Image (tube, rainbow, N blue to C red):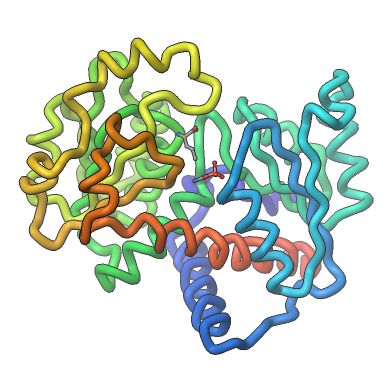
Length: 308
Ligand code: CP
Ligand code: NVA
């Protein structure tokens, strides 16, 4: 069954846009006090190998909000932690639940689970991608800018999992994206090449954050050391210093630019307290939208699976 969400680049613009539109509708319903029950009687398993606050709680809350049930399992407390093969885990969990939401290190892990699972596998962050996060970020851009078309977007910092998913999003939706990364910290080359071949608008890599941010309408930052890179934290702080988003750098962006950060943030590193708490920051809208987009994702993949 090819009904998994492993990377944004696997989907058409229409499918991703329909997920965002559904999330916007679910958000409006919640604000009006309406509760949907589209996943009543359904159960998902969250299988997490890395820490999480937002993704875990927003998937759980999103699922409960649609009438469904959630089982959380940390990978190290499961038999995976004792070496049980992924292919056995995938087939067993598929007998119990309607979808498996996975946060792990290697993209190969979610791919292997998807190969053997007979229910949808959703990527809730790997070292390579964070597709669900970028979908909620796109929803946020749509809310504040009214469109994704031609919205000049910039990424400042590490060419990490978030950067890779933004690159795929830019190529699918066709908005211009500039990434300012220190030498040696560029995004994944193969993802970039594929996105450039598919996309119609430029995806550029530059070294100078001031050059990248000029005229940008959406400014994205993320931690300099991602989960699993804790040992490099100190070294990265030295190498990334000039990539900090402070008020002076933000002043070079479009005057209506919004500042985005998927969180958790390290104030005083990738972004200053002033910018993060400032009027251009939409970080808590992004965080809220995770719940609505996760509900839309679960509904789409679980119900599509049933219809197939
Ligand atoms: N943004 C995000 O994925 O946060 P968590 O690590 O808290 O889930
Ligand atoms: N790039 C970060 C994102 C956290 C949500 C990480 O992988 O740790």
